[in-house]
Length: 163
Image (cartoon, rainbow, N blue to C red; front, side, top):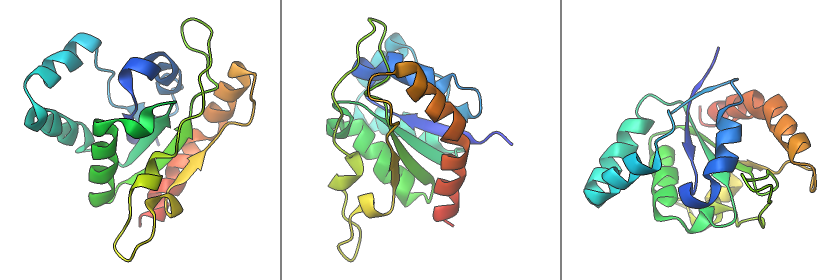
């Protein structure tokens, strides 16, 4: 069964890398929004952005945070993580810095975005959320294959961890 997932990522920096993961085909994700559509959503203000994100998350069972160099610093990625956690969705992270972009470049590894969240009782969200880092430092194709071979299991684990 294909799971319905929501992808959270830094659009400007990582759109090309994230499109590789989104096209794996083992899962059904939210349809990619074009840069023009996203600009239209943003132009209407923060409340409109929240409503758009909430609608995108509505029927998803899992949120996948695709972690690039600056993902942890993005306001709306933080909101998507917080909202997904509050809604009881499965959440996981995948580092994508070693996937090549449209220019054949890799980026630096970003910070774990879950480190910024503290749960009631003082525990870090990063202790609850699994983050996967494909192990092939200089082989973008091998990293893609590693993600493709494992993403379904990672999603099921994230969903089961929230039950």
